[in-house]
Image (cartoon, rainbow, N blue to C red; front, side):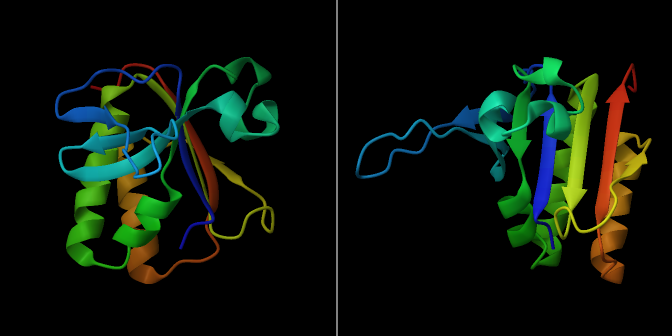
Length: 152
């Protein structure tokens, strides 16, 4: 469903039922960090300067190199295969977005094949849009949404 699904936040905030875990593979730690909301693995966590070869193009500004990127593509694609998993994924995403006063979300189904539409979405409308895209099998997906301000 997604080739790209990223959430950028200036700083990943400590929120209730949210934790960062580092897997301990048999070959030793590799430095990977994953964001969990309850029992749901929501994203891989990396700095923007590591995630993007062109921070300005992908993050909306070259000044965002120190922002935190949540790479949601793989968990989102896995969750989209099952209704209950998808519902849990969307609720975890909603919790993260509501917990951060500023964020940028980029979603694409076929990277660089279609113009990316800039949308103004609240966390709730973003989650509703993603759910409608899945249920109607809406393709292509190519949008970016930024939020800055109080939305509680």
